[in-house]
Length: 176
Image (cartoon, rainbow, N blue to C red; front, side, top):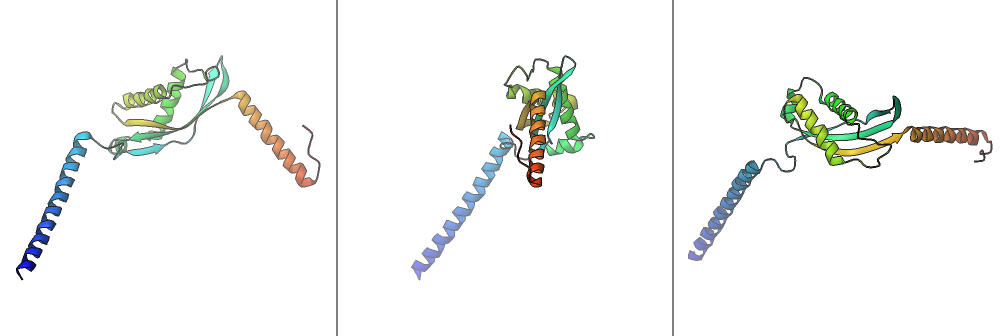
């Protein structure tokens, strides 16, 4: 019987120590998280834009189109305070950024400094709303289509449509 009491006391002791360790680990991990701030955007919302299409003007003519799909990381509490839809501000700032930076010449330059682009838009939005609304900007898609690219795509679509109509009508395919 004495051995049984020792066994029960040891089991109770093990349970108490285990519960104490778990409680201590949760308390210290919560304190560390508060001290460090949210983990990689923890507690923030992601606002995904539709495709933003900005015509690029050179010498009073459209040179092509800048296409972008971006994801904005925002604090949901600050987002609720806005009276203007955040998407309208975001699209306007992309337009403003591209038109106010004439050094961005997509027709002559194949590359875009993404860090500079993302930081420029983020800083412009935060300055405009006078609050650190945007925490980060993630790029989902960025493209530049020149007028020639658009024209070529249009011709290809028309050619495929004509070929499909001819095939359905039983006519031979045109020679290329």
